[in-house]
Structure formats: structure tokens, C-alpha cells
Image (tube, rainbow, N blue to C red):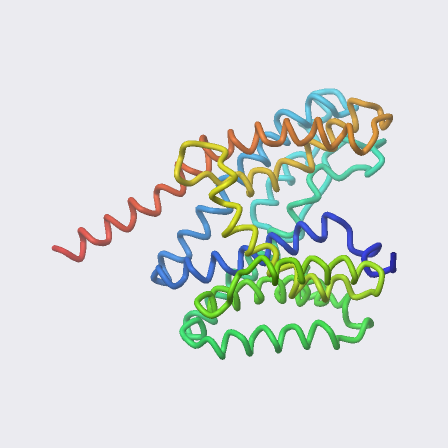
Length: 315
């Protein structure tokens, strides 16, 4: 196995998958929305769920598992500054006295680092949409090729360049995965999803584990497998009678603090398999809560606002 896959963790693969799917779905969302509605939709999708997980982290996980007394914990300025993460700028990962002895020490919710990049991508997509890029398939493809070329040829000395809290190399890396999702949406009527191509893509991924360039192969072959699975396994996998249930965001924002909590309770003596099994079950429960209690009700406001606009125009 080469250093390429070793340097790219399963978490990295999950983040890449998340951005690929986001590129597809957000392109579809922009096509159906006005600019105003697009901004409202993205805000309702990200921030209500994020605010709740921040609150649960500060008021439940923190007091229960910090080594500090309640008074010391709640009188510490760092406890309250954690809520600044709602702005997704200069993200704070720690809380006073929490998870200090974990194998992955101090970090309470490492997953939220990508949300800053995602929101920045939303703004970039808004600009592209404003100038009509989404209406031109070749323009979308050109954006993807340019970003990929910039990411591939960027000198390593510039990768760590900090742009107001955003690392240039990481930003280009995530944008290229978002852009490939945009390409799949733009060419959705021309791209054939067949099991033969899916098998070839799967073989290419396995081969790249030994030949190298797994990340580059995943950009093409991995994205194909993602959309093949999304469109052909969707009728097979049903978790609810509801027509639309999306636990992905809840799973993403709750998994890290739950894994850290399990590790803390097990005193770092648990195996990866045990931690994963327990954390997965608990995370799904919290993700279900997040969807039905927080995310879905707020997302329904999108339809309410659309109806309001229609009524106003009718007058």
C-alpha cells in the first residue's frame, strides 16, 4: 500500500464524498431557486443544526465529562467562546478540561472544520450562479478542470498558505471535489451509470491502492461509484416511510463528539471496532433527533417562504 492512501484517512474520504454530493445537490438547488432563496436555503440547512450541537456540547457533554468543577467550567471564558463557532471563523475545537487524556486529546468536535470551507464554497457557487455559469455545461466543466489543475500543480510550499483562516491547499482540494459534483449535475443527462463502468471504477480504486494516486483516482472513479450507488441503491435501502429522510448532516456533526465521549468513558481501552459500533448506534439516534426535531422543521420554512413570495406577487 502506498503512501497516497496512508496519507488520506477514511475521514478524508468521507469529507471528499460529502463535498462531491454537495456539489451535485447544491447545483440542483441553485437551478430551482432565486439568489435570495438560495441564501435562505443554505442558511437553514447549516446553522440551526450547528447551533443545537454546539449547545448540547457546551451544556451537556462539557459539564458531564470535564475534569473541572461546574463553577470553574462555566466561569471559564473559553466555555462561552465556543459559541463563536456558529460564525465558522477561526474554529475553536476545545472546551475547558474536556477529553484532555483521550487518544485524540482536547478536540471536542473536529468535524466542524469543514463547515467553514463548505460555507465558503456556497458563496463561491453563488457568485458562479449569479454570472450564469450553471447554465453552460462547458463552463462548469472548465471550472472543474481549472480548479483540479491548480490543486494538482500547486507547489507544496504554497499549500499551507493561510487565507484568513483557510489553508490554500485544503481549499483547492475540497473545491475540486465539489466541482466534480457540479459536473455530474451539469452532464446528468449524458453520463451513463452502468454496472460495467461501476466495476471498472471499483477496480481502478483498488489498483490505485498499490499503484499510487488514490486521491486522484477517487476524484473520477470514486465519484462515479458514489452516484451509481446513490441512484441504483436508493430504491433498495429505505430507512423510513417518509419520502425524504436525510441523516447525513446529523451524522456528520454528532459523530466526533460521540466518539470522543465513548473513548473517554472507556478510558482509552476500547478497540476501534468497539468504539465504531457504539458510536454509530448513538450517532444515528442523535442524527434522527437532529433531522426530525431541528433540521426538517427549519427546512420546511423554505416552502413557507416560497408560498409567501408567491402570495405577495399575486397581489
